[in-house]
Length: 626
Image 1: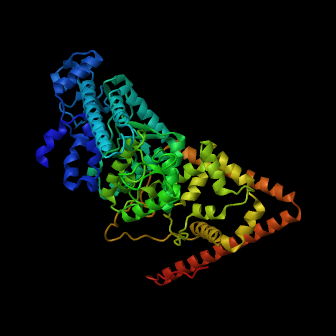
Image 2: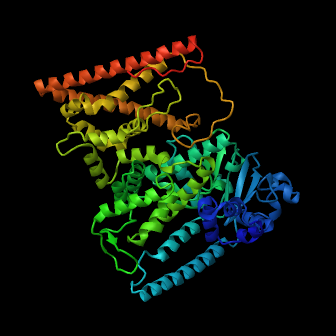
Image 3: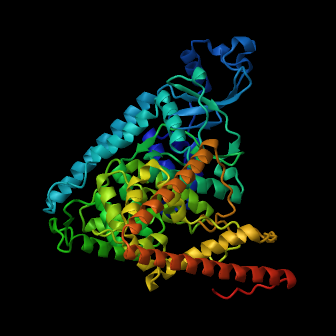
């Protein structure tokens, strides 16, 4: 309610961080509470402007009157800035932001730390640690009365310490500037992510000055621009989670902007998460398993990331002690499957998965929330809430799949390398055909070959990125070791039908884009509903950077080189096999010819349809399947 806005704005920093996360989750706290809590994103109670100016003056060793001429009438050449807004443009829990202009005429944002920031965090942390310590003792006492033994479901102190350490880091503006540079560099390969440029000559440990961003927050964007910003932010954070391991832990609406050039700009880098390579691989496997409804694989990912104990511990109800699960991981997977099916959004919402784990399965299974996961949970609960404002049917796992595929195909841990190898090849280097078909996906190839906006296949993009990178050694070795004779036999058999159909469609698409004129598009009378998905985001143009374009060219160049090397290696190997090698060449030739003919036939069907559309406007009959 509006009447509580003043008390909310005066909360401590730990409480504010919790409130900012809940402000994105109407499914947890309701629409009214979300609207009330959103003020915590940019409108916390500010401290006095006089105190802020004193902090600026003290940090740079000037008099308060010499901060800017508009504040005290001093000449511009004697002042630190040529202009400084008398009121803050935003107030956060640990500081507030002013808009200023440098003496060189550059518009900047100046973040000033609260004078009592360190004391406020220390007191807030002490209160939380004391309160949670009492709660832990109370739970242990209650459990002992029921004969369940002491509380042993994780260390609450570690949880509080993890959150508090992150907030203490927010007080170090030098560290924040370093974090911002590292975050920008880690995601430079995407091309559409940026951070404000840091001005070190006008910054200290308590003052952070950055360029002013020409853009807008979500609330000020039109629906399509809001969808673009949300899509880019989700892609950036999921890439951080499974590819770079360096994640922005505070991506609420106040810390995200869409710049005028179409790039998403992240703000406020005091709170960051770091993810180890083996955990990134577990998350990537979990994302793929969740989308495929592979609950055995998802259960294994939970165990690998520390949510489940090893060995598993299970109890029938709260009155019985934990023991070994009679059915092992398969039993947990079965209960997980049932709980996900019974929970709304179970396979599409991160919040629903958290509800399944914490609200249903934890009653019978010994589970933990590892401290390192806390900030990651905050990141993705917040992102999911933002995305739901744009598209209520948003599926966070679908958005994360392309990056999960890249991580799965480029493991760095010994366990991940072994898992990838075993998932693609048998012990005698024969292809695991079921795994290959699962990797390609179960959906029919896109029939709209003439649609120039059709997105590239996720698998193809992932293969291009991995095969042409230094992280693709495991995948390249598997391609080199595969039994070519067995692969050729599979490709020309009934089980290779889906691969042949996809190959024909790819040829049809290439011929269509090269030889046929493009259709003129008619703008719809009403804008279509925004959908945050691979299909719904076709019209969302992504910005790029010189670094991302160079990386893409380098990856494609190395992909061509590696492909040529692998082909030569297999050709030489088959030449040494005599008549068996000749049989393999014959099968591969037959496969290539069949795919080529199928592609040409499909292309002719598309061409005939185009001609009929020109001769008979309104003609919309689908061509016969090749």
